[in-house]
Length: 303
Image (cartoon, rainbow, N blue to C red; front, side, top):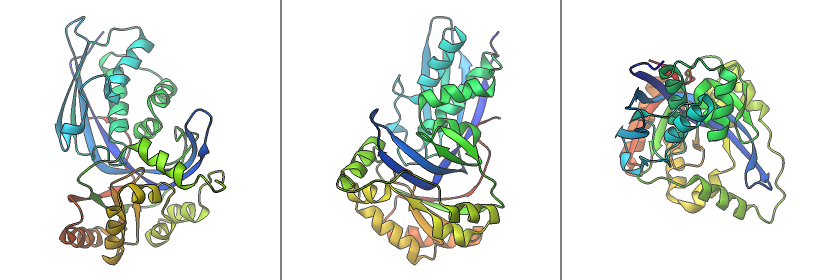
């Protein structure tokens, strides 16, 4: 049986910590990362198409010129993968409305994939166990599992192995958006190049970061933010260093390149403090736009 239409909201993420191990034989890296879901949401709607029509994707919202509308799109791949699992034909229309930056290091594509899995599972009335959806998420990409779960979590392996983290209170953020995206693969390759002559330690989660989350302490959290990919992002896009410096000068408790960039995330004490930082960053002329948000928030949810 197939329903008529299902809508899912799914959040962006910021990596409070991203520690990257040496490159593995399979080309990936072992990670120790702390994911944090924030209240910037994409919305994904799915509805059935005529039998034999296959998958169709449309997209509205921000930066949509950069979103592929074919099998390169992770949402397309998610619908196909679930259909194979369920032995169904993936005759579905996927409509994505984007608020998460595209190629911005906030896992917008992964979020859409997680939302599509959840939406198609409901549309096709599969009632798949969460363990099955988690397995499919891991096949789709390193960040997809977290987008399904949300909250705050430690990610290991490629990031797909999650352990929930107890985080007290709400943290307030300002996100500085760049005019152009950065390729995740290019940033990892640059990270490997920059570290080629050094000893790369096994990744591990910072105890001070865990303490800050348990205590709900934004000052300590700001001091504990860390991203091993940040220097690589600066190398490929030197202007990002000026953005981080501008956020520091504006009084942010801490600033970090989000994931592989180029979005820069700044932690504030309160919502009012976040507004002050956002106004200051906007006045510098260094960023395309800014968005304020807060976290943690739940993962993909049927709306």
